[in-house]
Length: 120
Image (cartoon, rainbow, N blue to C red; front, top):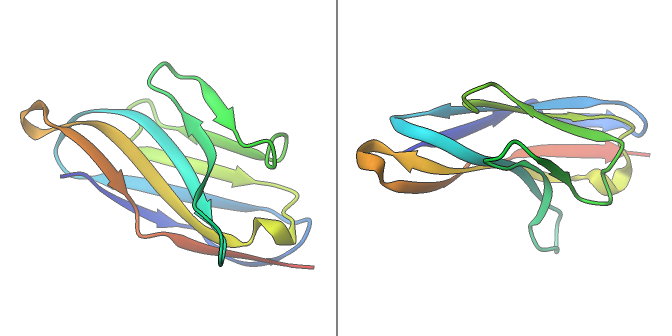
């Protein structure tokens, strides 16, 4: 099983920046898709940004031009650089990864989440 651990959340003022990190632990054959999701109080979890197995980065319209997702070559480390933060970015941010683990069994893992709070 692959475990994901996020870090880097916090409370900041609008207009400032934060960088989230996600580290993968465990035995795996490959990490294919990696992504950041977020869930605000009373709302459904939504995709923020992803890097596909083909290396394509996709972003939610609400964060395009402000957030940047990046990852190490093996995708064991994934980052989300968040600039020009807005109060509406307040949410718990989750790291997500899929791939193939020990025995070439597929895995679909989530981190525990990290809180980001943006005040006006």
